[in-house]
Length: 200
Image (cartoon, rainbow, N blue to C red; front, side, top):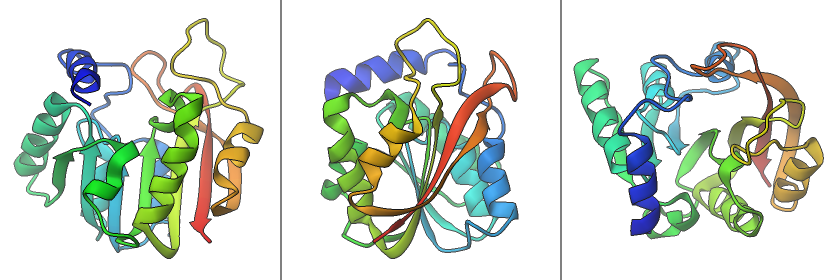
């Protein structure tokens, strides 16, 4: 895991394109429309913590995890500065069983983590998310869609079929709908999919 940590720590020495000073609008909308309710919440791949902080500000008991120690350190400082209680931890989303009990969370969110997973990691990831959610718990995932143009290998552009094939074996999928992934490079314009799924 240390090699992965070093890569992501290097990324967070600067300001990567997804490192916004506000939450992703898709998650703000989920809170506003009541799809995300107060409860115990986990933000996987939380980065510098904007999405985790907005969950905490709306009544959730939140833990944020990320491989990047730099990001977690900055997230802790940000939460302290804003007087918001969030627990931030350096952890690998593919090994959450080391940190969390089964069924520990009511909701799990993922903003741009799944779309950097390799093919062989996807099933493991889905199983790990499934494990930490309680029965009936909700998983919300935002990723680049295959409708987003781009010449680079990462982040991956995913089809609805790829998302469904990964998560449908262990989740009941409520929807996979078109959304926007906000970034510093092109604010409010990157084409994405938003997944809503329930632990079956």
